[in-house]
Image 1 (tube, rainbow over the protein chains, first blue to last red):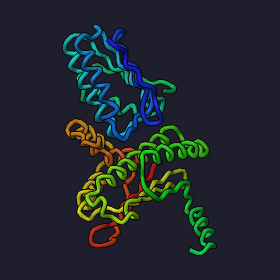
Image 2: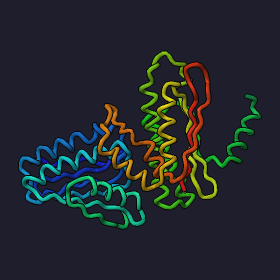
Image 3: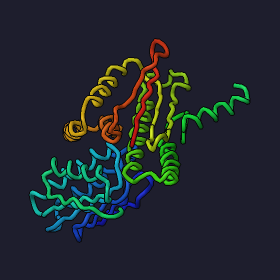
Image 4: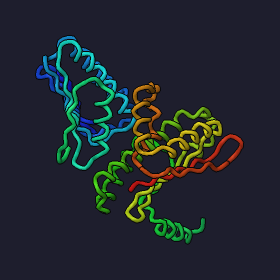
Length: 127
Length: 183
């Protein structure tokens, strides 16, 4: 399956979804005006990936900060991954936050509380 | 305005410790520029990372509220062009950042907005977090991608009561002023 690669911009994170290795990474800030437009290709990709997923899927979320409309789309993305998790792949979310960024740490905990996936909340020096 | 008023205007902004001010039409490009300017200002002021991110978050939500609101104005096309613009101001006082916004809103929208503001001001941090989670799960995203979470997020990032005022302008419109303190 084709890799999804999107370069980051001032308002959107970089995206690197690799179906072969099962590693999906998002990095940077996510504050687009139209979050649905940005996230739709990611959600579509995950849906296609879901038909023949890698036995292990690792999602690395390395977000600096995001707007509220992205927060809804991130939830949608996790919901799609939930479906894959119940079938053929073990999905793990690595949620990274920068040292002392308690808001981003809380955001990870919030998703972990409302999404039925394994979460690791991990502190790093810099995203 | 007399030319000497330029000095008065400058002094006033200086005294009020205004570090950024913009009046005009809001656009996506403007947000990018303002975030860029604020980024370098906050580096100059040695503002800690967490506070910096909170300021960005608040500015983004304010802008996107204003931007979407103005775009979806039911009176579109019939408005005086000056009513399509808004004001955003950032002050730096006692190591705190204050974001002030001002924009026209149709009187019919006041009750709903006021209700939201009263509600978030009454909730503590834990309650705001719970409300956010609940809204995240239940709200559907409108076609413009606004999830109705903006004010809750602003209140969570501010950790202070939100200041607001509605000033009557005419039969149809009021001017909505919002102040958000971030420490």
